Length: 285
Ligand SMILES: [Cu+2]
Image (cartoon, rainbow, N blue to C red; front, side, top):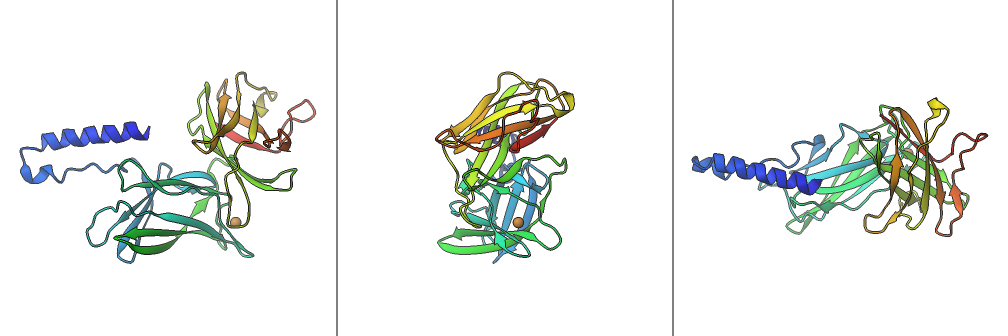
């Protein structure tokens, strides 16, 4: 998708450049902002440079957040390539501090846009807040910025992330990534699984299995055919399977987490006596 978008932007800029070619002074300055369709969630100054945090969403929400970072050099006024940024989200709670599962930041096609994700486990409130430390380089000088983030509970109240203790007494964080725009169809589903090694460290857990049993609680808890359990994709470093929705409405995706030996770590089968699993995501459309 990103590639398609990029090429369409490139095509558009070529088109614009051609149309402006009669006016020599304009032809070089015509550039389409590759982040035009994204929301600027945050913009702040750090030692003369400007940091931008962008997203396809309007807000930072509990669960999986795909984010984009740009750094504008205060001296040249250009967005910085090769900034080698890294980041660390920290929640400052009344009794303690903790981080969240997050990916590395890597440059996307344009070279000056860095993308990654953060999985927020909880929202901020009036006494407790998240901040983000961002380290980056410009001409071999290292800078460090820190900025508060506003993390909200999802507006629809649906569960897209769970922090649980498994039967192995290990803490896990499981977050839904796709589908972001669910349809009445069989479609890809992906999720991220982390273990909580410490308050500050959440490594990815590979090679488990996530069994899936989608149900409609409002309609006699009926299910759907042709679902595929999620298995680990080592390239994408996430769990991928297929989910089938046969109609619109609220679906509870009952889950069962199995470790690499096939032992059940969390979640239960759905039966007459047990209509829901303790491990689940919710999807409504
Ligand atoms: Cu917290």
